[in-house]
Image (cartoon, rainbow, N blue to C red; front, side, top):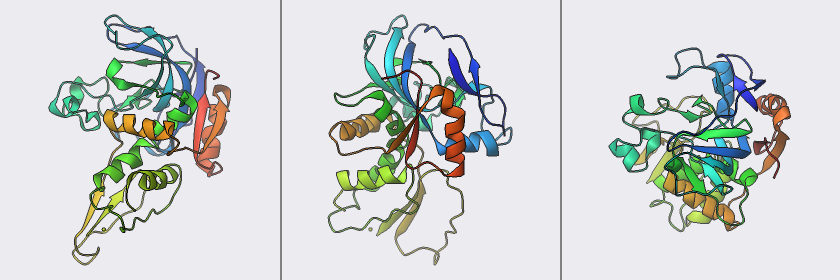
Length: 287
């Protein structure tokens, strides 16, 4: 099968032929319907020197993924072949207290995870390919009626990440409160929709979402009194279920530009130059 792979740090990706994976016990093979090209992939490709993250190339890119169940490994009985699914991106150990609470982004035992601090497209092979091997059925969420894999794919990160950030501040986002979004791009245009769909509109929160760069000086007089400064990372499975439900009900919509898998290298080039609005979705298998 064809796959867009990062072969080394600080280099662009390349389309290669690789074997179709076969699911082992507890694993699921997904036929990819949509794989989002995320700006953080550009950091992986061009900015991160060796040692920045606890894994190394080569691996297939693509951590925003959705598609259809192609094949079930032994012991997987909660899914059906042909079922449309979205992929939860962060793959923790599944055993520690945080993973058991559904917070696999903050896994306490990365040494037991499939890849420390990552997942498909982040250290392991991702969805910029015709098929994606998912190590456990818990990393898959059935798509609600009315939501196809192409529209669902970017929601697994670009929708989930701002949703998680907004939920952290929801008690302060009461009717009459004011929320300000700065630098509204691929994540931001979804974050604004999440605010509108789930809150009444701050003591306040200042939340940094994504890897946009820059610095935030924090001191007693550097920010207003009673303001909390915080960062977030991605989101969890339960929140993804809620994000997909919002999208299925027409309350959340990602602006996307579609590319075939053969055009994926060009898509990343356009993303790098800032020539794409919203999110890029690579479609390895037509819908």
